[in-house]
Every structure is written in structure tokens, then in C-alpha cells.
Image (cartoon, rainbow, N blue to C red; front, side, top):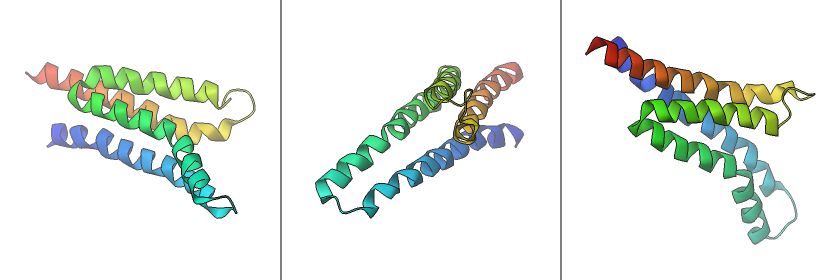
Length: 115
């Protein structure tokens, strides 16, 4: 039961965190811009979510590789959004991906230990 729970928690948490990021990109639809420009802005805002979705697909198949990629993505995103030099609120978005990466690696290591 614990292994099944540890299997699903990082996957569900990742999906929720990606949806949380996508929610922030919905603000592009509030202006007077043409629809094509709004859709382009929506796609541009969702590039990090697309990258994280691709990492989730990798992590679903290869947990350690995906876990490392999530940790690297969280660190890179923290530097990109200047979390350590004046924008600590961006850590609210990045920390779940670091935790998810650790959980993917932890699940893989516990699964191999029990076999």
C-alpha cells in the first residue's frame, strides 16, 4: 500500500503543479489584443509547463532520470525567475518540482531495496 501511495503522490502532485502554472497563463485573454495574438501569448506563457510535462513523461517511465530532471528544472527555474535575488515568491512555484523529483528518486530506491 505504501509503495502504491509513493508511486502516485509525485505524479498527481506534478499534474497539479503544472495545472497551477497553466492557470497563471490565462491572464493573456483579458486584453484588447486579437485572438491570434492572445493564443500566441498563451502558448508562450506555457512553454515551461510543456517542458515540465515532457519531464513528467520521462519520469513516468524512468523515475531516477525524471527525478533528476525535475530537480534540475526546479533549480534552473529558480535562477531564471531570480528566486535567490529579490523574488522569493517564485519558490512557491519551483519547490513542488524539487519535492517531486526527490519523491520519484525515493520511490525508485525503495522499490529496488524491497526486491
